[in-house]
Length: 346
Image 1 (cartoon, rainbow, N blue to C red):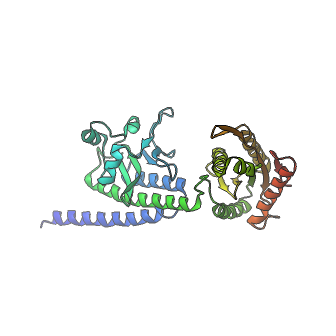
Image 2 (tube, rainbow, N blue to C red):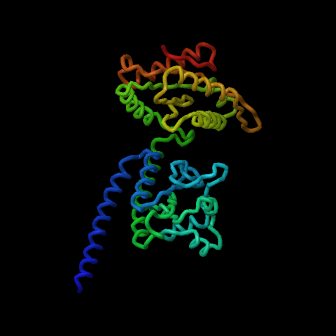
Image 3 (cartoon, rainbow, N blue to C red):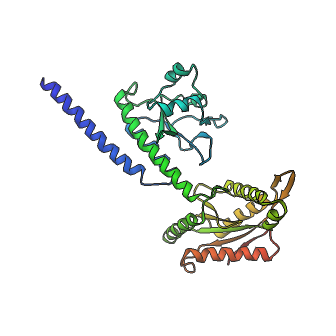
């Protein structure tokens, strides 16, 4: 064997060893968080750095029971028309193909296979150079879209194989995040469970005490909820709970946490929000619920909420129970004051 061949072979092995080490570090990085938004951001930046591209986007499901894949808002580099519907059905022919065959795809390759894009037409305006399925345990749980590389005309087969290895790690991390969501989410309302809320509350209290940034909580209760169950049955009560939960969720930011605290009681955690701002948010929720009509079995029903607000005070609130109790006491004041009100703990 010529020296040049030995050198080339050694360089190839060294690159493979380096890439394996990189995959190990990537695996540790992606599995270091179960926060979905942070995970998606990490996946995109990892792939952009490894593949030397300026455009990357990820498709994933928005929730546990979702039947479609949505373009995640953390896309990088692609020009997005916000009037365009980018959703992809989970049962699209291309998605079924991805579940059977593990490889990277180009749009021309998909057209050759299907005659069209096999249900991936919504992503065509983005013009991705490569579509990479994210597959864990034989199930596709996302797609990675990549633009052109900075330095090369196209992805080599070695790069595609390496990219698939990253995709496997990303798919496992996304699957873990979904499993975490399932164990911390109330299946009826799709809000977080009480124990998750309390865990995050303790974390945010510690952060607030250190940064001196305000932190507030809102407790709310559906007024006269028992009447819905007694008059129309528990299915009606469930529909009322889900309708109120959807409205509460629609009022939250990505940094907020909304949870089902008890039977018909909900709570919200609002970082970087003082009592006055939290009172405005609570009032907006109260107003929107009051003006929300719920149709059930031919009946149109109205619902109201009573709410209590408390801002975390590190001098008084030595634990999470203290600030929640103060918010609950403010909620009791709203109940005693005639319901359908917002009260603030002093």
